[in-house]
Image (cartoon, rainbow, N blue to C red; front, side, top):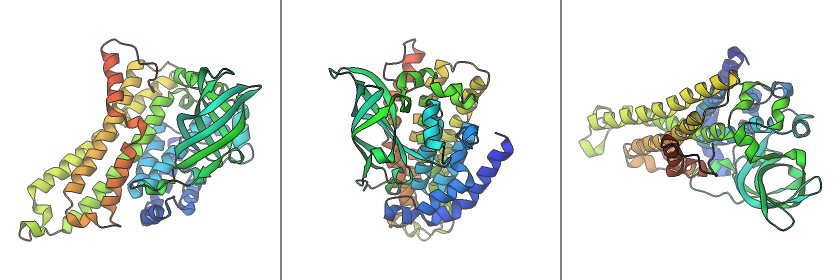
Length: 393
């Protein structure tokens, strides 16, 4: 993809920000991103960024995708979250066998997928594929998708675990259970997916081991460097980037508010003249910048290796996970600092700062943001130990 095409998408997304900002409360109230917002992002080319060229996609650099996500989330946290996790699924589908890609995109290249990767269901080996049953939670944006990606542990006839795979199902094979009612990221519509004995053919599944090794069947047809990078690197930053975007939105809202705010606690002085408030703003800005710059640097190095046809070094994979969880921590900490500096009026329903504050904490709760677990992975590597068997790298 040329830089000009990527810039065109970013400019189109930028033009949407005022209306996305206006709809943020609407998304909260409806517990789902408005359909008009998803359609507008589609028309801007956002969902094509990580999609293969052979199916009308742009095969963009991940940083271009993340920049768009960051912008969207700065206007509306829920919309940014849904855009990020739904948008990355085009990349993952490109790793599946070609027959699966054709089923999803053959008739409609704008088809979208949601996901829930925790292996909470049961997948039993059967002739030609798998029999899948279970309930999966937190499928963000599932109301805007007609396919779903579900994680599952495969068992044999004696119910012994033999594999861990991701399964691709059409909407005719699952039901959406509307259970999403939360204090943060309320607009993401992250409802449950229920499957009752659906047959999933072999070509609509992808082994976790293949993904970890960056050796997937879809790479035969999709040869771009984009499809030779680790799932653990790309997906983890797909969760952290919208949180950074939310922190930017909180920062912008806070600074705009503080410029004219008069503090009743300090004899009617303007808050903008308070040196302690100034320090808090500086600290928050520095933490947000650090969170983003680490992702930008790491993705640049990742793609340099991929373009050279090289295996992704384990130290880089570990560093990406380290910086990803620290990026989330820095972004959440920055919003906490800004919220504490905003005064009691920030508590009012409908204000941007309290919504971003709730949203970043909801995003922090995602399993990929387990700080100590990811830092332990990095520490093990630095001390000469191999990654744990369950490490998401």
